Amino acid sequence: MNDQHDHGALGDAEYAEFMELAAEEGFDVEDVEGAIEEAGHGPLPVLAVVGRPNVGKSTLVNRIIGRREAVVEDKPGVTRDRVTYEAEWAGRRFKVVDTGGWEQDVLGIDASVAAQAEYAIEAADACLFVVDSTVGATDTDEAVVKLLRRAGKPVVLAANKVDGQSGEADAAMLWSLGLGEPFPVSSLHGRGTGDLLDEVLKKLPEAPEQRFGNAVGGPRRIALIGRPNVGKSSLLNKVAGEDRVVVNELAGTTRDPVDELIELGGVTWKFVDTAGIRKKVHLQEGADYYASLRTAAAVEKAEVAVILIDTTDTISVQDQRIITMAVESGRAIVIAYNKWDELDEERRYYLEREIETEMQQVSWAPRVNVSAKTGRHMEKLVPAIETALAGWETRVPTGRLNAFLGEIVAAHPHPVRGGKQPRILFGTQAGTKPPRFVLFASGFLEAGYRRFIERRLREEFGFEGTPIHISVRVREKRGRKK
Image 1: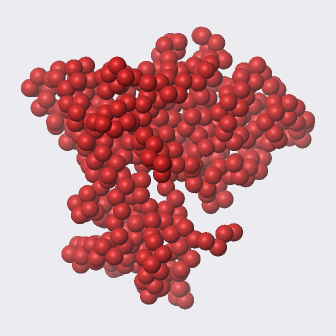
Image 2: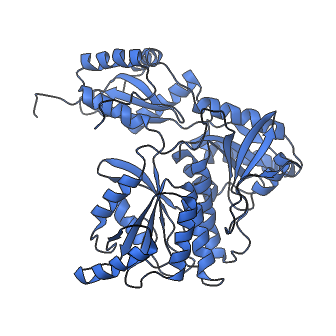
Image 3: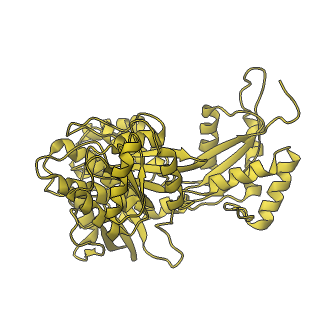
Protein backbone atom coordinates (compact mmCIF):
# COMPACT_ATOMS: atom_id res chain seq x y z
CA MET A 1 0.00 0.00 0.00
CA ASN A 2 1.11 3.52 -0.72
CA ASP A 3 1.57 5.70 2.36
CA GLN A 4 0.80 8.82 0.35
CA HIS A 5 -2.78 9.96 0.87
CA ASP A 6 -4.85 11.58 -1.82
CA HIS A 7 -5.81 15.00 -0.47
CA GLY A 8 -8.47 15.45 -3.14
CA ALA A 9 -8.46 19.14 -4.09
CA LEU A 10 -6.85 20.24 -0.78
CA GLY A 11 -3.35 21.68 -0.60
CA ASP A 12 -0.96 20.45 2.13
CA ALA A 13 -1.47 23.40 4.54
CA GLU A 14 -5.25 23.34 4.08
CA TYR A 15 -5.24 19.57 4.57
CA ALA A 16 -3.26 19.78 7.84
CA GLU A 17 -5.61 22.45 9.19
CA PHE A 18 -8.62 20.42 8.15
CA MET A 19 -7.35 17.23 9.84
CA GLU A 20 -6.77 19.18 13.06
CA LEU A 21 -10.40 20.34 12.95
CA ALA A 22 -11.55 16.74 12.34
CA ALA A 23 -9.55 15.48 15.35
CA GLU A 24 -11.06 18.19 17.58
CA GLU A 25 -14.56 17.08 16.58
CA GLY A 26 -13.75 13.47 17.52
CA PHE A 27 -13.50 11.99 14.00
CA ASP A 28 -11.19 9.10 13.27
CA VAL A 29 -8.30 10.39 11.09
CA GLU A 30 -8.34 7.33 8.81
CA ASP A 31 -12.09 7.63 8.30
CA VAL A 32 -11.75 11.30 7.31
CA GLU A 33 -8.84 10.56 4.96
CA GLY A 34 -10.83 7.71 3.40
CA ALA A 35 -13.88 9.94 2.87
CA ILE A 36 -11.83 12.66 1.14
CA GLU A 37 -9.97 10.13 -0.99
CA GLU A 38 -13.19 8.38 -2.03
CA ALA A 39 -14.99 11.63 -2.89
CA GLY A 40 -11.96 13.09 -4.65
CA HIS A 41 -11.55 10.30 -7.17
CA GLY A 42 -14.08 11.70 -9.58
CA PRO A 43 -15.70 9.66 -12.34
CA LEU A 44 -15.72 5.90 -11.88
CA PRO A 45 -13.73 3.57 -14.13
CA VAL A 46 -15.82 1.94 -16.88
CA LEU A 47 -16.00 -1.77 -17.74
CA ALA A 48 -17.62 -2.74 -21.08
CA VAL A 49 -19.18 -6.21 -21.25
CA VAL A 50 -19.03 -7.38 -24.87
CA GLY A 51 -19.69 -10.56 -26.86
CA ARG A 52 -22.12 -12.01 -29.35
CA PRO A 53 -25.81 -12.51 -28.44
CA ASN A 54 -26.99 -15.29 -26.13
CA VAL A 55 -23.66 -15.95 -24.42
CA GLY A 56 -25.07 -14.73 -21.07
CA LYS A 57 -23.79 -11.13 -21.00
CA SER A 58 -26.83 -9.60 -19.31
CA THR A 59 -27.07 -12.44 -16.79
CA LEU A 60 -23.41 -11.87 -15.95
CA VAL A 61 -24.01 -8.11 -15.66
CA ASN A 62 -26.81 -8.85 -13.16
CA ARG A 63 -24.33 -10.98 -11.16
CA ILE A 64 -21.75 -8.19 -11.21
CA ILE A 65 -24.15 -5.42 -10.15
CA GLY A 66 -25.81 -7.71 -7.59
CA ARG A 67 -29.40 -7.17 -8.70
CA ARG A 68 -31.65 -8.15 -11.56
CA GLU A 69 -31.69 -4.99 -13.63
CA ALA A 70 -30.25 -5.71 -17.06
CA VAL A 71 -32.66 -7.20 -19.61
CA VAL A 72 -32.15 -10.93 -20.13
CA GLU A 73 -34.87 -11.95 -22.63
CA ASP A 74 -33.58 -13.90 -25.61
CA LYS A 75 -35.97 -12.42 -28.15
CA PRO A 76 -34.80 -9.69 -30.52
CA GLY A 77 -36.04 -6.16 -30.13
CA VAL A 78 -36.09 -5.98 -26.34
CA THR A 79 -36.52 -2.31 -25.46
CA ARG A 80 -33.66 -1.00 -23.33
CA ASP A 81 -33.79 2.13 -21.21
CA ARG A 82 -30.39 1.84 -19.59
CA VAL A 83 -27.06 0.43 -20.64
CA THR A 84 -24.88 1.71 -17.77
CA TYR A 85 -24.97 0.41 -14.19
CA GLU A 86 -22.90 0.96 -11.07
CA ALA A 87 -21.18 -1.98 -9.39
CA GLU A 88 -18.92 -2.61 -6.40
CA TRP A 89 -16.43 -5.39 -5.71
CA ALA A 90 -13.88 -5.68 -2.89
CA GLY A 91 -14.64 -2.10 -1.80
CA ARG A 92 -14.06 -0.60 -5.24
CA ARG A 93 -16.81 1.00 -7.32
CA PHE A 94 -16.96 1.03 -11.11
CA LYS A 95 -19.44 1.40 -13.97
CA VAL A 96 -20.57 -1.49 -16.15
CA VAL A 97 -21.72 -0.91 -19.75
CA ASP A 98 -23.89 -3.82 -20.86
CA THR A 99 -24.13 -4.58 -24.59
CA GLY A 100 -26.31 -7.67 -24.26
CA GLY A 101 -30.02 -8.05 -24.65
CA TRP A 102 -31.21 -8.00 -28.23
CA GLU A 103 -30.28 -9.69 -31.44
CA GLN A 104 -30.06 -8.21 -34.94
CA ASP A 105 -31.24 -11.12 -37.06
CA VAL A 106 -32.26 -9.35 -40.27
CA LEU A 107 -29.01 -7.99 -41.61
CA GLY A 108 -26.61 -10.48 -40.09
CA ILE A 109 -25.37 -10.80 -36.57
CA ASP A 110 -21.77 -9.76 -37.27
CA ALA A 111 -22.63 -6.13 -38.12
CA SER A 112 -24.84 -5.83 -35.05
CA VAL A 113 -22.27 -7.27 -32.63
CA ALA A 114 -19.51 -5.12 -34.09
CA ALA A 115 -21.56 -1.95 -33.68
CA GLN A 116 -22.57 -2.77 -30.10
CA ALA A 117 -19.04 -3.71 -29.10
CA GLU A 118 -17.56 -0.65 -30.75
CA TYR A 119 -19.75 1.89 -28.97
CA ALA A 120 -19.14 0.21 -25.62
CA ILE A 121 -15.38 -0.23 -26.04
CA GLU A 122 -15.10 3.45 -26.91
CA ALA A 123 -16.46 4.44 -23.49
CA ALA A 124 -14.47 1.85 -21.53
CA ASP A 125 -11.29 1.71 -19.47
CA ALA A 126 -11.28 -2.11 -19.71
CA CYS A 127 -13.41 -4.80 -21.42
CA LEU A 128 -14.93 -8.07 -20.26
CA PHE A 129 -15.30 -10.33 -23.29
CA VAL A 130 -17.89 -13.09 -22.73
CA VAL A 131 -17.72 -16.30 -24.80
CA ASP A 132 -20.01 -19.37 -24.59
CA SER A 133 -17.58 -22.15 -23.66
CA THR A 134 -20.09 -24.87 -24.67
CA VAL A 135 -20.01 -23.56 -28.27
CA GLY A 136 -16.37 -22.50 -28.46
CA ALA A 137 -14.95 -19.57 -30.42
CA THR A 138 -17.07 -18.65 -33.46
CA ASP A 139 -16.29 -16.38 -36.42
CA THR A 140 -18.27 -13.62 -34.67
CA ASP A 141 -16.14 -14.04 -31.54
CA GLU A 142 -13.02 -13.72 -33.72
CA ALA A 143 -14.42 -10.49 -35.18
CA VAL A 144 -14.91 -9.07 -31.67
CA VAL A 145 -11.31 -10.07 -30.79
CA LYS A 146 -10.09 -7.97 -33.76
CA LEU A 147 -12.09 -4.98 -32.48
CA LEU A 148 -10.65 -5.39 -28.98
CA ARG A 149 -7.10 -5.61 -30.33
CA ARG A 150 -7.57 -2.47 -32.43
CA ALA A 151 -8.95 -0.56 -29.43
CA GLY A 152 -5.93 -1.50 -27.31
CA LYS A 153 -7.94 -1.62 -24.05
CA PRO A 154 -7.15 -4.19 -21.30
CA VAL A 155 -9.34 -7.31 -21.72
CA VAL A 156 -10.55 -10.04 -19.35
CA LEU A 157 -11.88 -13.19 -21.07
CA ALA A 158 -14.90 -14.88 -19.44
CA ALA A 159 -15.63 -18.48 -20.52
CA ASN A 160 -19.31 -18.63 -19.62
CA LYS A 161 -21.67 -21.58 -19.02
CA VAL A 162 -19.06 -23.66 -17.18
CA ASP A 163 -21.35 -25.35 -14.67
CA GLY A 164 -18.99 -28.01 -13.37
CA GLN A 165 -15.59 -29.72 -13.70
CA SER A 166 -16.53 -31.15 -17.11
CA GLY A 167 -16.76 -27.66 -18.58
CA GLU A 168 -13.23 -26.67 -17.54
CA ALA A 169 -11.73 -28.35 -20.64
CA ASP A 170 -14.11 -26.37 -22.91
CA ALA A 171 -12.99 -23.17 -21.22
CA ALA A 172 -9.32 -24.05 -21.70
CA MET A 173 -9.91 -24.27 -25.48
CA LEU A 174 -10.48 -20.49 -25.49
CA TRP A 175 -6.75 -19.85 -24.96
CA SER A 176 -6.78 -20.05 -28.79
CA LEU A 177 -8.35 -16.56 -28.97
CA GLY A 178 -5.01 -15.10 -27.92
CA LEU A 179 -6.46 -12.92 -25.17
CA GLY A 180 -4.75 -14.69 -22.29
CA GLU A 181 -6.31 -16.87 -19.60
CA PRO A 182 -10.01 -17.70 -20.00
CA PHE A 183 -11.81 -17.41 -16.62
CA PRO A 184 -14.41 -20.19 -16.32
CA VAL A 185 -17.71 -18.85 -14.94
CA SER A 186 -21.38 -19.65 -14.72
CA SER A 187 -23.30 -16.37 -14.86
CA LEU A 188 -26.47 -18.32 -14.10
CA HIS A 189 -25.18 -19.94 -10.87
CA GLY A 190 -22.46 -17.43 -9.93
CA ARG A 191 -19.65 -19.99 -10.13
CA GLY A 192 -16.23 -18.40 -10.63
CA THR A 193 -17.48 -14.80 -10.72
CA GLY A 194 -15.39 -13.80 -7.67
CA ASP A 195 -12.11 -14.77 -9.37
CA LEU A 196 -13.30 -13.06 -12.55
CA LEU A 197 -14.02 -9.81 -10.73
CA ASP A 198 -10.67 -9.94 -8.92
CA GLU A 199 -9.05 -10.02 -12.38
CA VAL A 200 -11.32 -7.21 -13.63
CA LEU A 201 -10.16 -4.96 -10.75
CA LYS A 202 -6.53 -5.60 -11.76
CA LYS A 203 -7.29 -4.32 -15.27
CA LEU A 204 -9.39 -1.30 -14.24
CA PRO A 205 -7.53 1.86 -13.22
CA GLU A 206 -8.05 3.06 -9.62
CA ALA A 207 -9.37 6.26 -11.15
CA PRO A 208 -10.14 6.45 -14.86
CA GLU A 209 -7.89 8.17 -17.32
CA GLN A 210 -9.07 11.76 -17.65
CA ARG A 211 -10.22 11.77 -21.25
CA PHE A 212 -10.72 15.49 -21.19
CA GLY A 213 -9.31 18.85 -20.14
CA ASN A 214 -5.68 17.76 -20.31
CA ALA A 215 -2.86 19.95 -19.05
CA VAL A 216 -1.47 20.80 -22.49
CA GLY A 217 -4.67 22.66 -23.33
CA GLY A 218 -6.19 20.26 -25.88
CA PRO A 219 -9.64 21.12 -27.23
CA ARG A 220 -12.48 20.83 -24.73
CA ARG A 221 -14.83 17.96 -25.54
CA ILE A 222 -18.55 18.45 -26.11
CA ALA A 223 -21.16 15.72 -26.59
CA LEU A 224 -24.31 16.67 -28.48
CA ILE A 225 -26.99 14.40 -27.07
CA GLY A 226 -30.74 14.07 -27.36
CA ARG A 227 -33.35 11.66 -28.59
CA PRO A 228 -33.39 10.62 -32.27
CA ASN A 229 -34.47 13.28 -34.80
CA VAL A 230 -34.10 16.13 -32.33
CA GLY A 231 -31.71 17.98 -34.68
CA LYS A 232 -28.24 16.87 -33.54
CA SER A 233 -26.88 16.42 -37.08
CA SER A 234 -28.33 19.75 -38.20
CA LEU A 235 -26.82 21.54 -35.21
CA LEU A 236 -23.41 19.97 -35.80
CA ASN A 237 -23.50 20.90 -39.48
CA LYS A 238 -24.57 24.45 -38.64
CA VAL A 239 -21.81 25.06 -36.06
CA ALA A 240 -19.24 23.38 -38.32
CA GLY A 241 -20.14 25.40 -41.42
CA GLU A 242 -17.81 24.45 -44.27
CA ASP A 243 -14.81 23.73 -42.00
CA ARG A 244 -15.98 20.34 -40.83
CA VAL A 245 -12.94 18.18 -40.03
CA VAL A 246 -13.14 14.47 -39.27
CA VAL A 247 -10.34 13.60 -36.88
CA ASN A 248 -11.19 10.11 -35.75
CA GLU A 249 -12.50 7.83 -38.45
CA LEU A 250 -11.39 4.25 -37.79
CA ALA A 251 -11.19 2.01 -40.82
CA GLY A 252 -13.67 -0.83 -41.05
CA THR A 253 -16.04 0.34 -38.35
CA THR A 254 -19.81 0.28 -38.58
CA ARG A 255 -20.47 3.80 -37.40
CA ASP A 256 -20.42 7.36 -38.66
CA PRO A 257 -17.41 9.58 -37.96
CA VAL A 258 -17.32 10.43 -34.28
CA ASP A 259 -15.18 13.47 -33.44
CA GLU A 260 -15.24 16.86 -35.16
CA LEU A 261 -12.77 19.68 -34.51
CA ILE A 262 -14.75 22.89 -34.91
CA GLU A 263 -13.78 26.52 -34.35
CA LEU A 264 -16.40 28.57 -32.55
CA GLY A 265 -15.97 31.99 -30.99
CA GLY A 266 -12.25 31.94 -31.82
CA VAL A 267 -11.74 28.67 -29.88
CA THR A 268 -11.33 25.13 -31.23
CA TRP A 269 -13.71 22.61 -29.66
CA LYS A 270 -13.95 18.87 -30.12
CA PHE A 271 -17.54 17.77 -30.75
CA VAL A 272 -18.19 14.13 -29.89
CA ASP A 273 -20.93 13.42 -32.41
CA THR A 274 -23.80 11.21 -31.28
CA ALA A 275 -25.86 12.27 -34.27
CA GLY A 276 -27.39 9.74 -36.61
CA ILE A 277 -27.30 6.00 -36.12
CA ARG A 278 -25.78 4.12 -39.06
CA LYS A 279 -28.45 3.75 -41.70
CA LYS A 280 -27.84 0.00 -42.06
CA VAL A 281 -29.63 -0.63 -38.77
CA HIS A 282 -33.22 -0.98 -39.97
CA LEU A 283 -34.71 -2.74 -36.97
CA GLN A 284 -36.80 -0.11 -35.20
CA GLU A 285 -36.77 -2.12 -31.96
CA GLY A 286 -33.01 -1.95 -31.81
CA ALA A 287 -32.69 1.73 -32.69
CA ASP A 288 -33.44 3.04 -29.18
CA TYR A 289 -30.93 0.62 -27.73
CA TYR A 290 -28.19 1.72 -30.14
CA ALA A 291 -29.02 5.36 -29.37
CA SER A 292 -28.65 4.71 -25.62
CA LEU A 293 -25.36 2.89 -26.07
CA ARG A 294 -23.99 5.55 -28.36
CA THR A 295 -25.10 8.37 -26.04
CA ALA A 296 -23.46 6.64 -23.05
CA ALA A 297 -20.20 6.28 -25.03
CA ALA A 298 -20.20 9.93 -26.10
CA VAL A 299 -20.98 11.26 -22.63
CA GLU A 300 -18.16 9.20 -21.09
CA LYS A 301 -15.71 10.85 -23.52
CA ALA A 302 -16.97 14.42 -23.05
CA GLU A 303 -16.62 17.23 -20.55
CA VAL A 304 -19.83 19.05 -21.48
CA ALA A 305 -23.13 17.49 -22.56
CA VAL A 306 -25.22 19.81 -24.74
CA ILE A 307 -28.71 18.29 -24.45
CA LEU A 308 -31.00 19.11 -27.37
CA ILE A 309 -34.74 19.32 -26.75
CA ASP A 310 -37.21 19.50 -29.66
CA THR A 311 -39.49 22.37 -28.63
CA THR A 312 -42.17 21.48 -31.19
CA ASP A 313 -42.84 18.27 -29.25
CA THR A 314 -43.73 17.78 -25.58
CA ILE A 315 -40.80 17.02 -23.26
CA SER A 316 -40.78 13.21 -23.16
CA VAL A 317 -39.75 10.41 -20.82
CA GLN A 318 -36.91 9.73 -23.25
CA ASP A 319 -35.68 13.33 -22.87
CA GLN A 320 -35.76 12.85 -19.09
CA ARG A 321 -33.73 9.64 -19.31
CA ILE A 322 -31.05 11.31 -21.40
CA ILE A 323 -30.86 14.22 -18.93
CA THR A 324 -30.56 11.76 -16.01
CA MET A 325 -27.74 9.89 -17.83
CA ALA A 326 -25.81 13.15 -18.31
CA VAL A 327 -26.35 14.28 -14.68
CA GLU A 328 -25.36 10.88 -13.25
CA SER A 329 -22.20 10.89 -15.37
CA GLY A 330 -21.17 14.14 -13.67
CA ARG A 331 -20.63 16.18 -16.84
CA ALA A 332 -21.17 19.92 -17.24
CA ILE A 333 -24.57 20.50 -18.88
CA VAL A 334 -26.14 23.00 -21.29
CA ILE A 335 -29.77 22.69 -22.43
CA ALA A 336 -30.40 23.75 -26.04
CA TYR A 337 -34.06 24.17 -26.95
CA ASN A 338 -34.08 23.55 -30.70
CA LYS A 339 -36.59 24.62 -33.42
CA TRP A 340 -37.45 27.71 -31.34
CA ASP A 341 -38.27 29.66 -34.51
CA GLU A 342 -41.10 27.21 -35.32
CA LEU A 343 -43.12 27.97 -32.17
CA ASP A 344 -46.36 29.94 -32.10
CA GLU A 345 -47.40 31.89 -29.00
CA GLU A 346 -49.60 29.10 -27.61
CA ARG A 347 -46.91 26.41 -27.89
CA ARG A 348 -44.35 28.77 -26.34
CA TYR A 349 -46.66 29.35 -23.35
CA TYR A 350 -47.16 25.62 -22.75
CA LEU A 351 -43.48 24.87 -23.33
CA GLU A 352 -42.47 27.31 -20.56
CA ARG A 353 -44.90 25.51 -18.19
CA GLU A 354 -43.37 22.14 -19.21
CA ILE A 355 -39.86 23.45 -18.61
CA GLU A 356 -40.87 24.57 -15.10
CA THR A 357 -42.30 21.15 -14.20
CA GLU A 358 -40.28 18.65 -16.25
CA MET A 359 -36.81 20.23 -16.20
CA GLN A 360 -36.53 20.85 -12.44
CA GLN A 361 -33.59 18.46 -12.05
CA VAL A 362 -31.45 20.68 -14.32
CA SER A 363 -32.83 24.12 -13.43
CA TRP A 364 -29.18 25.09 -12.75
CA ALA A 365 -28.08 24.42 -16.35
CA PRO A 366 -27.55 27.32 -18.80
CA ARG A 367 -30.33 27.45 -21.38
CA VAL A 368 -30.13 28.55 -25.02
CA ASN A 369 -33.07 28.82 -27.44
CA VAL A 370 -31.73 27.94 -30.88
CA SER A 371 -32.61 26.91 -34.39
CA ALA A 372 -30.20 24.40 -35.91
CA LYS A 373 -31.85 25.00 -39.29
CA THR A 374 -31.53 28.81 -39.47
CA GLY A 375 -28.60 29.29 -37.11
CA ARG A 376 -30.66 31.47 -34.74
CA HIS A 377 -28.82 32.28 -31.48
CA MET A 378 -25.92 29.92 -32.29
CA GLU A 379 -23.57 32.63 -30.99
CA LYS A 380 -25.05 32.04 -27.51
CA LEU A 381 -23.94 28.40 -27.45
CA VAL A 382 -20.24 29.04 -26.71
CA PRO A 383 -20.81 31.43 -23.76
CA ALA A 384 -23.25 28.87 -22.29
CA ILE A 385 -20.67 26.05 -22.69
CA GLU A 386 -17.96 28.24 -21.11
CA THR A 387 -20.26 29.10 -18.19
CA ALA A 388 -21.00 25.40 -17.58
CA LEU A 389 -17.29 24.49 -17.72
CA ALA A 390 -16.44 27.28 -15.24
CA GLY A 391 -19.08 25.95 -12.81
CA TRP A 392 -17.81 22.38 -13.31
CA GLU A 393 -14.27 23.44 -12.34
CA THR A 394 -15.20 25.76 -9.44
CA ARG A 395 -13.35 25.12 -6.19
CA VAL A 396 -14.39 26.60 -2.82
CA PRO A 397 -11.55 26.95 -0.25
CA THR A 398 -12.21 24.92 2.90
CA GLY A 399 -12.12 27.96 5.23
CA ARG A 400 -14.74 29.79 3.17
CA LEU A 401 -16.90 26.67 2.89
CA ASN A 402 -16.89 26.10 6.65
CA ALA A 403 -17.78 29.72 7.38
CA PHE A 404 -20.73 29.30 4.99
CA LEU A 405 -21.77 25.96 6.58
CA GLY A 406 -21.62 27.54 10.05
CA GLU A 407 -24.01 30.31 8.97
CA ILE A 408 -26.42 27.78 7.40
CA VAL A 409 -26.50 25.53 10.49
CA ALA A 410 -27.12 28.55 12.74
CA ALA A 411 -29.89 30.02 10.54
CA HIS A 412 -31.49 26.76 9.31
CA PRO A 413 -30.75 23.85 11.69
CA HIS A 414 -31.67 20.31 10.66
CA PRO A 415 -35.16 19.28 11.90
CA VAL A 416 -35.25 17.33 15.18
CA ARG A 417 -35.89 13.63 14.55
CA GLY A 418 -36.43 11.11 17.36
CA GLY A 419 -35.34 13.61 19.97
CA LYS A 420 -32.02 14.26 18.19
CA GLN A 421 -30.87 17.11 16.01
CA PRO A 422 -28.04 16.15 13.65
CA ARG A 423 -25.59 18.95 12.89
CA ILE A 424 -23.09 19.55 10.09
CA LEU A 425 -19.82 19.94 11.98
CA PHE A 426 -17.53 20.85 9.07
CA GLY A 427 -16.91 19.99 5.41
CA THR A 428 -14.54 20.21 2.49
CA GLN A 429 -14.61 20.13 -1.29
CA ALA A 430 -12.76 16.96 -2.19
CA GLY A 431 -12.72 17.43 -5.97
CA THR A 432 -13.91 19.25 -9.07
CA LYS A 433 -15.20 18.19 -12.53
CA PRO A 434 -17.87 17.96 -11.09
CA PRO A 435 -17.64 19.64 -7.65
CA ARG A 436 -17.68 16.96 -4.92
CA PHE A 437 -18.21 17.81 -1.26
CA VAL A 438 -17.83 15.74 1.89
CA LEU A 439 -19.80 16.91 4.92
CA PHE A 440 -18.97 15.53 8.36
CA ALA A 441 -21.99 15.44 10.66
CA SER A 442 -23.06 14.38 14.15
CA GLY A 443 -25.94 12.31 12.75
CA PHE A 444 -27.77 11.24 9.57
CA LEU A 445 -28.81 14.14 7.30
CA GLU A 446 -32.15 13.68 5.55
CA ALA A 447 -32.37 13.88 1.75
CA GLY A 448 -34.49 17.06 1.94
CA TYR A 449 -31.83 18.82 4.04
CA ARG A 450 -29.08 17.70 1.66
CA ARG A 451 -31.06 19.20 -1.24
CA PHE A 452 -31.42 22.42 0.77
CA ILE A 453 -27.63 22.50 1.33
CA GLU A 454 -27.05 21.97 -2.42
CA ARG A 455 -29.48 24.79 -3.26
CA ARG A 456 -27.71 27.16 -0.85
CA LEU A 457 -24.27 26.14 -2.19
CA ARG A 458 -25.46 27.11 -5.67
CA GLU A 459 -26.86 30.44 -4.46
CA GLU A 460 -23.62 31.27 -2.65
CA PHE A 461 -20.92 29.97 -5.02
CA GLY A 462 -22.56 29.71 -8.46
CA PHE A 463 -21.91 26.20 -9.83
CA GLU A 464 -24.00 27.05 -12.89
CA GLY A 465 -24.18 24.22 -15.38
CA THR A 466 -22.75 21.47 -13.18
CA PRO A 467 -24.11 18.65 -11.03
CA ILE A 468 -22.91 18.75 -7.41
CA HIS A 469 -22.13 15.57 -5.47
CA ILE A 470 -22.54 15.71 -1.69
CA SER A 471 -21.56 12.79 0.53
CA VAL A 472 -22.04 12.77 4.30
CA ARG A 473 -19.90 11.02 6.92
CA VAL A 474 -21.44 10.57 10.37
CA ARG A 475 -19.23 10.65 13.46
CA GLU A 476 -18.98 7.21 15.06
CA LYS A 477 -19.80 7.12 18.76
CA ARG A 478 -16.78 5.49 20.35
CA GLY A 479 -16.58 3.91 23.78
CA ARG A 480 -20.36 4.01 24.21
CA LYS A 481 -22.77 1.18 23.52
CA LYS A 482 -26.51 1.46 23.31
